[in-house]
Amino acid sequence: MAAGANVHVQGLYFRSYDDVNNYDSPVPNKFLGRTFALIFKTKLNETYATKPINYLKPRTTTNDVGYAGDCRDMVLDIQTQLQSFPGRPIDEVKVACDCEAEVSQKTDAFFFTNCNVSFTGDRVQGQQNLLMVLTEECLEGCTPQITGLDLKVDILEVSEIQSSDANSWECSNRGKCDYDTGMCHCYDGYYGHNCNNNHKLV
Image (cartoon, rainbow, N blue to C red; front, side, top):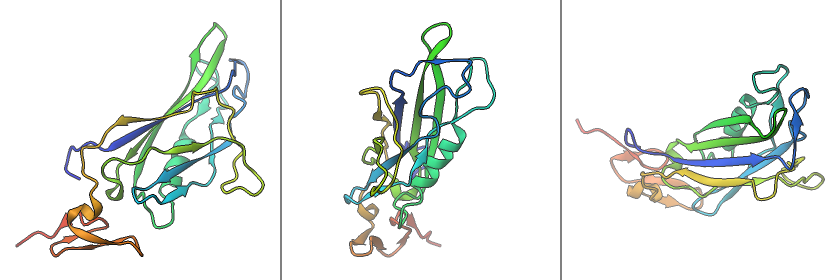
């Protein structure tokens, strides 16, 4: 991708269902530590589901706005799971989450989580299908098995935050795809997973 080109960024927004919490509670949110999953669909209509992703862990200490969930593990978990699909259709993503409280009264808060997923890898250049989020409890007989999240109705959102100005042509228009293996066979002078690199002439 050319230097300075925009990558595709998607936003995930979660909000708990009518969950009013007192700041003094050591576990302020009833779905801290529960699990959900993400689904990624390639432009060849291949569908991949992540392993269960842990929602926020409760912090053990208070801050200026009381207790809130700890984002760090969830950020790393989302990144790791999206980059761990068989065949690595996503070679790199960057994830950033904001996990804070919106003050509605003097001592109460609704909790929400907002994450941005940036598709920064060579294999995910250009516009991608929007991620899908699995939040319904599904245990015995399910893959993946998730404990689910009790979310406020219509407040789970997946949206485009930034569109990509890179092309997403098959094999970068510099090769042909072998649909049996999913690999690109690059034309002379080009190489890489999607033929987006060229050999410099000397």
